Image 1 (cartoon, one colour):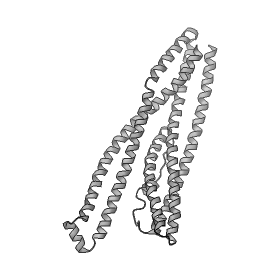
Image 2 (cartoon, rainbow, N blue to C red):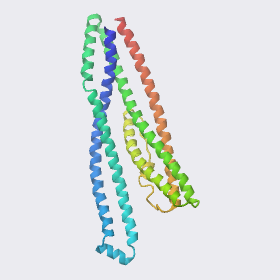
Image 3 (cartoon, one colour):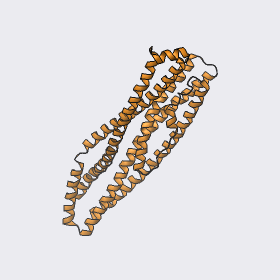
Image 4 (tube, helix red, strand yellow):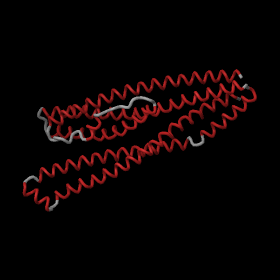
Length: 310
């Protein structure tokens, strides 16, 4: 009888531990969504302003006429278009981050809905077991059972937090791998371009750069999430200064092949360093998870032996 109840308790106990972890994450996620919504509104206002400046120069206006007469309209137009592109990139980056946060929230809510009554079921099973121990066991045995239960709860919660970290870290690692491959290809085409390539090599290079920019936005979002997960498991956050550079990495002197080639190489080195750091952290997380799982199994074996001895 008690052995059957223990099996059911072990299943529900895992669910309770997972629910606690997810509820904490949902609370933090809601705060991040509100902050990013405020940021997106500010970026949208700035984007509209920059677009307005570009459109004013394109149409016949007093300022456009003055710049034309002075002979520097083209220079002014290039400056305004770059400012607009920077604003657009920052807006798109924030928008991508916000969408990712909302998708993550939806997934968490769905998981929590599936775990809605697990605490009630856990309490009912525990009450049944305690009732049986009250009949057959002593006060000392009851206290020992409660202590083991608390230790198991703690370890299971740690495992769930580590598993959440591993999931996000693996997603981040996959995005980094794709970005690295794009930058490798961009390096090849950039070298061909420097050695006297044609329009095809130039177009190929810039296509790889454009695709890498999109991955940088995804990496930025996932890196933020990964650092949040690492704090939950007491691992130092990743500090990647190259990510900030990546957001507007190819804007300055974009038509200078030597400058672009240098920035591609720097970005490639940065992404390789980040890949190694994420890999090392994932290795540590998996080792910690294996250690905790072993501890839980040992505790459960002691628990089962104790229950069977009553």
